[in-house]
Every structure is written in structure tokens, then in C-alpha cells.
Image (cartoon, rainbow, N blue to C red; front, side):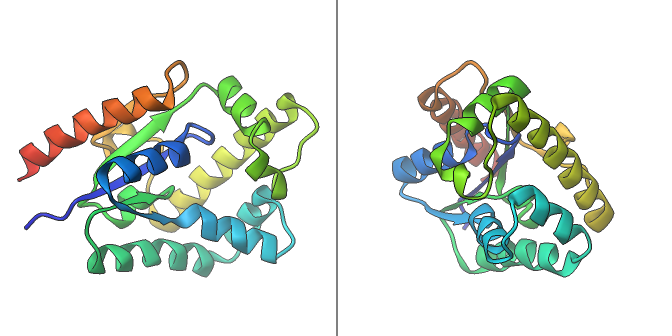
Length: 187
């Protein structure tokens, strides 16, 4: 029997977590989140997420362990959603989604998110925008150096959606439609 797994990745502040929670609720799926673990490690190291990204570049064992944990989880579970930068890579048999968002909208969303203030504290939206660009490049370089992959290659995904001008409810609906089609085709 085919496992029912969805991996969601995308641009920073594209709505991944919001939509993951909505999908999990609608489908009755569990959620596996690498990002929470990454943020927890950053806080434990007394670093911002960007500083920890830089730190992990010289400590690849941390990155590999985070990704391996998703692979191990998938081997033992069904009916779940992976909210992780490289979930699509760690669990290639999943329905792989990439959410895109315009950088200005991304910065605005991130700046207004109170949960991010614990590890990402900027005085202006523009400062946030510059940090998001920096993190994006750091992650892309790290993933290429560690795994030889480009997360921004849209050929890696089964479904790509720009969330800039649509609501989370619309994003959820579009993903569910595509996921159902994928399940029928993959059966």
C-alpha cells in the first residue's frame, strides 16, 4: 500500500507552516518539522537562525542528522506532512511541494510574525529582507556543498505554487487538489 506523505518546502515566509497545519487538520495527518528542531538548536547555541546557518556550514554533521531524522521518520510512519527545507530530498517518495513568495511579501510576513522574534529580531522590514536574502543564499550554498542539490530547482517538485497574492485557505485548496491527482496517478 502506498504511503501518504507530503513534503512542503519553499521560500522563507511563504506560508509553509500555516499551510502545513491547515493540511494536517484537514487530512488528519501528523506533522514532522525539521525547522522547529533547527530553531531550537539555534536558541540553545545562543544564536540567531542566520548565525546558526553559518555555524552549521562548518558543522555538517548537524545538517546531516537533521535530514536523516526525516528519512527515519518516514520509514516508520504513514499519513504525515514534512515541513522541512529538504523534506523532498530526504523523503523522495513524498508528494513534493514548493511554495514561492515575492521577497518583499516574505519580509513583510516574517517581520510581523511574533514567533520569529525569539531568534530573528530586526528593526525594519528592509533589514529583514536583507537577512532573508542572506539566509536563502547560505542555505542554497550549504545544500549544494553537502548534498550536491539545488533546492531552488523547481524540477525537484511535484507541485509549485506562488503564495504571494493568495490566502492560506486558497493555498490549502490548491494543494489538496494537486495531492489527490498525484495519489491517483501514483497508485
